[in-house]
Image 1 (spheres, rainbow, N blue to C red):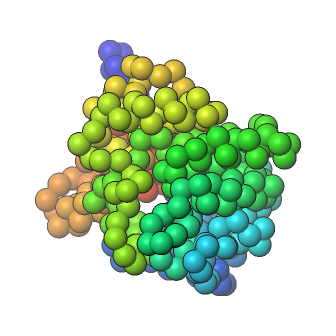
Image 2: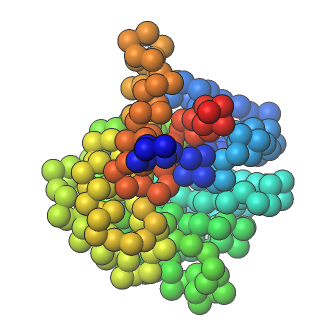
Length: 306
């Protein structure tokens, strides 16, 4: 009766890795329990999520081939548009979001076009917008730019509006930190940079005031939802964001946070179920309306058992 924070299935989004091929359910070594799915295997997994009661998914693509410009990211026949079309055909009520970035698709692993050894912010913007438009055309309800290029939300919002997709929502990865907790994801998506790192365009882990400026910028550019990523090491940033901004606030409970709990649980060092529910509740308590988590299916099942 007096519980102050209530975690609900409706708060959760399940991230999903999709890849080319047939009959593929490929385990990811660094993320026990998480797999890459080929399109023909996707309906079974989506069906489980829907049965549990999860309202939404977020697609990440693993391309068949990569190039300097990340061409498959904005191809109408790319793996993510295929996944979106399949999801919407099979489960029309499912909210489908798509990550918008080039890192999974570029041969160098960076989130934008490389010019003279550095990421060229302005050359990258139209490619991100083009990718977002292809995902919207395929049926995505939400596009989620994660490249941390200055102006990415404005470029995407303008192209969507000009192309008749005014109702497609933009969820900005507004405060995305240059974190070590992304390691397992980079194995899952094959997106580790081949040189350098991403600290030139992702945020300094020591800064919180900068996060407020980044979020304000995304809001001015037309974001419908904002995000803090990662979640656990940045609960203070999340709480500050919640007290300052009225937009729906998402938090990404990232791969490294997932894998740490999985490893500790497998070794019997912690009670995995209790740890997961405590962590997700802490993210909700800090102010998140939406939690993107690899624990979505398990947590949804546990919440349904209450």
